[in-house]
Image (cartoon, rainbow, N blue to C red; front, side, top):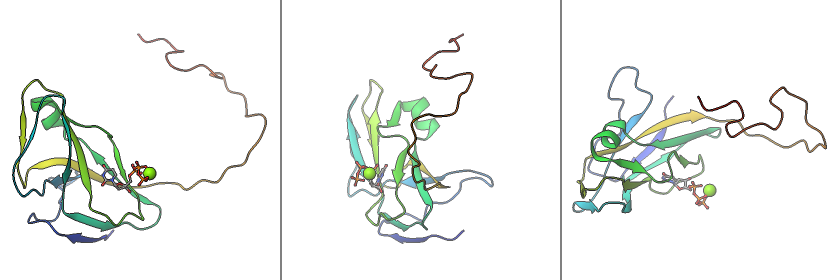
Length: 144
Ligand SMILES: O=c1ccn([C@H]2C[C@H](O)[C@@H](COP(=O)(O)OP(=O)(O)OP(=O)(O)O)O2)c(=O)[nH]1
Ligand SMILES: [Mg+2]
């Protein structure tokens, strides 16, 4: 599918890095380098604005390599970009490591997955259908 995008950054448009990648990497769009101290979080701009079709969302997810090598996560992961959002896409990075982490413009800081979603309406009732699980949850089936 084709999605309309405004790119106010100096980076190329997000792209799939391999043939069947689910996500496109998002790059930081910064005037100068940003340092994330241990346990610090910062909103990192991308310079991108998109026009998703109704019924679609974009999920902003962490990159595994940054998480593994540098302890970098996303506070609100997975972030949700609504189809009616026209503002700049930003990424709320957090440094879970014990070392400062530097983000430079052009760095690939997250990945974006465009996904279809349902839109539901409610049918309010008094009783729900029975299942063998019933109300069991939160480890009901054991943890081992
Ligand atoms: O990682 C993210 C998550 C969200 N957004 C933008 C797009 C999204 O449509 C909007 C609102 O996000 P969300 O609904 O998660 O936040 P909220 O706290 O509920 O804000 P709002 O009251 O504006 O819906 O912020 C981003 O740019 N990056
Ligand atoms: Mg919201």
